[in-house]
Amino acid sequence: MGELENLKGRNLLEPGDFTVAEQKALFDLADKIADSPGAYQDTAKGRLLAALFFEPSTRTRLSFESAMLRLGGQAIGFSEAQSSSAAKGESIADTVRTVGCYADLTVIRHPKEGSCRVAAQASDVPVINAGDGGHHHPTQTLTDLMTIRREKGRLDRLRVGLCGDLKFGRTVHSLIKAMSAYDGTGFYLISPEELRVPSYVIRDIEAGNGSTYVETRSLGGAIDRLDILYMTRVQRERFFNEEDYIRLKDSYILDAMKMRPARADMIVMHPLPRVNEIAAEVDKDPRAVYFKQAKNGMYVRMALISALLGEAQE
Image (cartoon, rainbow, N blue to C red; front, side, top):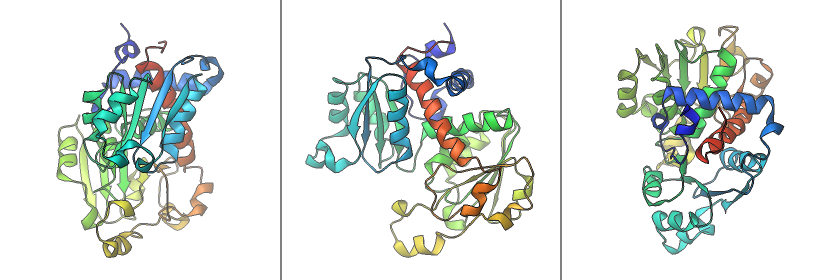
């Protein structure tokens, strides 16, 4: 049985749910889809995806829906909790159990950590975590890894700078966990003191395949060493105190001047949405790949949907 066949009927809740070999098979398929999307237009014909978004999303929700439609399937769901029976007090377990009666696959975004695991335990169809609070965002991680592989040609022995909100940033937590599984990743963790990486994420680095890390407050002091700079926004919705958000929101702003010391082959990534942490002038820099990254997200989700439904071809 091939690696993609192993994924049939599985859940994706955390980055570590798929092995490195399974990830590689997914990226190989995603590359094929990106190069010839029309060849996959009937892959999910007659199948239905349910997108249950209990908090706002643009890219992730539309990316999943676009992926399913481009595979020939259909998508249903809701984009906010108030338009679902959660507003009446229904548990996420009951919601998912019911939706599984209609759909072949369920995608969930929820503001509470661990909610997607609860949902998966109740579901009779595969569940994909599209973000649970500040915990994990594994399909963004697949998007990030695919982008890194396409741009850098490999996923091992890279120096990765992660800058901004490293405390609440679930995309950061997921990417660190995933890249720690590859040989010799060097992490540069760039943040204000108040937004440092949580200790459980540091443990993922320490348990990795020869991974190392440096914590610093200085973007300028690290940028010339990096293969990848992964910028993040300071997330207003994760703060309990508005004053703290206002004080920290402009801690790092990447502009053309700050890009000057960076290596010619460094790439700049961002999970989006951005606020003002990357100046618009950087969009013209060939090292800026965050819009390519967004497009890659659709292709890797097409590959993921195909595999979980058992429709993927090696």
